[in-house]
Structures are given as C-alpha cells and as structure tokens.
Amino acid sequence: MSEFQKSLLIIALLVVAAVYVYGYWQQWRYRRSLDRGHDAPRSEPRAAVSQPTAVAAAAPAQESAEHFIAEKPAAEACDLLDNTLDYIVSMTPKFPVSADILEAFWPRRFDYGKTIQTCGCNAATGAWERVIPESPASYSELKIAMQLVDRNGVISDTRLADFRELLGEIGRKQDADMVLPLTDTALERARELDNFCASVDQMIGLNLISRGERPLFASEVARAVQQSGMSLQADGTFHQFADDGATLYTLAVSDGTPFQHHTLDQMQVKSLTLLLDIPRVKEPAKCFDDMILLALDIAPALRVTLVDDQRVILSEGAIAHIRDSVDAVEQRMLAGGLVPGSAQALRLFS
Image 1 (cartoon, rainbow, N blue to C red):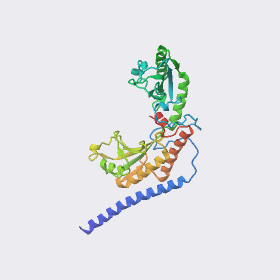
Image 2: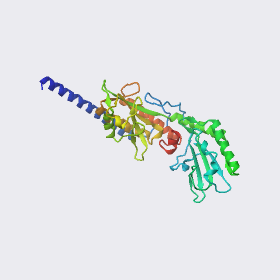
Image 3: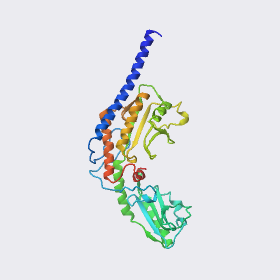
Image 4: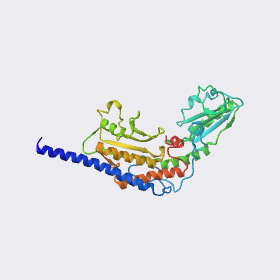
C-alpha cells in the first residue's frame, strides 16, 4: 500500500470517527438538557402550537378547555360506554330475552360509519357483557351504544336519527322500557367534543435523510432500529412498543413505501420519518424525548441527518420548541379531562 493510499485510509477513518463522536455528543447534550428540564416546574396548560414538523394540522385552540371526559380505568368495552362519547339506547324488556331480539338491527350495525357496542346484563349472572348475534345467554337489559365522535368527525344527524328510530321500533315491538336520548342534545355535545379533539389532534414527524447521494439499504435500517427495540409490523413500519403493548412511535419510509421482511436486503431508501401520534400515547412529551434519543442514536450508524419538513437541520433549539408544543397538547388534553393514551383517547382518535 502506497503512502498516498495510507493517508486516504487514515483520513477516512478520522471522518467516520468524527461522525460518531458528533452523534454521541449531540445525544449527551440532549440528555443533559432533559435532566435540567426535569428539575423545572411543570408548565401551565396552554394552547397547542403548530410547527413545521407537525404532520397533522390542528384547529385553533381556545383559551381554556372545558372538562369533557372523566377518565375510566376499566378496559372492557361495556365498562367504557360513556354518555359523552356515545349515544346509548337502553332497552329493558318485560322478561329476559336473547340476542335474537335485535334481529332487525344486526345486519344494519355497520351502516352508520361509527363504532357500535352492544352490551347486555346477563340474566343468570347479573354481569354486563358484550353481545353479538351468536350470544347464547339471556339478558334482562340491553344497551346499544354508537360512538358519536372519532377522527372522521361527528356522526351525521340523519344517521343518528335512523339509529334511534330503528332501535325505538324494536323496543316498541317488544313492549320494552326504553331510554332514547334526544338526538339534538347528543349532537350538540358531540360537536363540542369534536372541536376539543380537533384542537389537540396532532402528529409529530421527524425526518432522517441520507447524506449526499448515498441510499440506505432497508436491512441497515432494520439492524439499527432493532437494536433499540423497534420491530417491523404488518403495516410496513417499525414500531416502538410500551410495556403494555401500546405503540409509542413508528419509523417509516417517508414516501410511504412499506418495509417488508423479504425485501429488506434489496430495498433502498433515501429518507425516513419517525412519527409520534400525540393523543394516542401516554406521556407524549416523555415519548418525544425517547424518539429524539433514538434518532440521535441511529443517525451516526446510518449516516443520516435529522431535519424538518423543509429539510432544514433541526437544531437543539428547534427540538426544544417542538417538545414544548408536544407538552402543550398534553397539558391541554389533561385540562379537558382526557388522558393521552387512555382507552377514551384511543377511541376518540381512531
């Protein structure tokens, strides 16, 4: 090997070492800033702020949030029914009935475009349980609940009126005692809730682009993120999971091309996106911190740069600004009585 070749090799090794040192230095600085931040008093609730890296636009936030929802710890579908989220029809027949009483309803339950839960009080055990057409038990009372709000907006007045009329007709034929809430009141409540949800419905995307013209092999990406605990899922993205199995954040190809196990060795990408769905995760600000640390950890190995949607390198100040906006959304949700990542939040932001 000539002296010139040796010099080039030494320079290349120094460049690689510098990249790794810079990456670890960035990570150390961010961890130190987090340690300082944890000692500071928690900020007061404030309106959510959009920034270039907020993928989903949010509606203008109000000065203060009404307390909309009381948190419920139960995870069972029937325990989660809530007059704030759902339009609930109660039906108490003269005698215990089977699921066949809803024969006219079952084929139409998918026509409304919203999640519907049917629950019954088991006549033998007295326990509330989910009812399906094939349920063998008899029930002393039934509750049929249609979710009023999700990410697609509020149920339409015509669909809600049709839902009410159909179940009212079934109850009248059975001479059952019925509770049929007024649709106007339910819709007014639902629109208020939808406005609140729109004001906090944000996703944060962080982009990782390869330096120069060098493409990334998907297999490289997989090795880097799997060492950090992420795993490839059926939706074609890598997920970071919490201990309870909930998704914390995802890593995807920026153009939406799915990762696939059998093509990782051949697939090449130029840009990746880490995505945090704020309302659907517990402690979103902490989750954002973990996502940043992952980005700083894998950036040197993959030789990628952390940028915003305009491909401007994210400085420490820009990252801190984004974190503040994540914390603002978290605080606004809590002020409105909706805990990020809770069962109610997962229902509303689905």
